[in-house]
Length: 341
Ligand SMILES: [Zn+2]
Image (cartoon, rainbow, N blue to C red; front, side, top):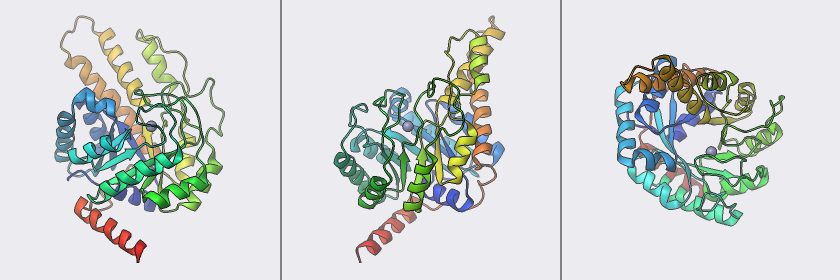
């Protein structure tokens, strides 16, 4: 199966009433772990790469690893998404490389740190949407800013999404999905104490979804940061401070109110580091690196499979025939023609 459109994958998730995890990757073991989890749970899947991942692995390596994933797991619809594109240039280079979806994060300026003004956001997002849709590629925008910093991205300031403005930016840019700031943060240290329910501004999710029933809502910073992973990591020589993520039940509540794409990065990082530390500690005499790279792949597979079941995407890989990007391009062209006539 070729890499598929994120738009179609999320449209199907909306029909089925489930969410789809978007998991970050930097190397072969993470991609294999995700694809094994998708096969075991029969899930459609979103694999995403940040700018940091693209520079770590190298564009060509990353892209060809993803082509291998699509070839080796033909029964799994998989979308390849650019996470937090900081400028139209980053998004356009991802599209030219073969990504089937891009995020233009115009909530921040191109430095990925300074909070941008609204008109700037609209302008860069529209520019990317025009380029992407002409090629059948999906676009995610962002409105509002999350707390926390990850992979060098983030202002550290929290500005919750304004539903009125969300409606306006979708209307003016034609984006397929919108990342909303509804109380989550990037990174492992999302909350200073264990969150007691009501983590998310659920009324905002409901209101944005009501105003934009055809635009898919995206939750960033949605790792759950499980206590047992931190315990394992620390028991094997790690030194992580106590950290609290978004409880899975809160994410499930979000999914029931219209969230379709759920970004998970930290949980994969924790699972891998815990597994590698344990493997090294268990066999200090071992010097074949496959001993711990294999453990890293297994750690990723486990946490991803668990999330796939929890988000509801499990069992849905075979629900539909993937549309080609050419077919998607056609659909975008027809929608645009319909809008102007
Ligand atoms: Zn994010």
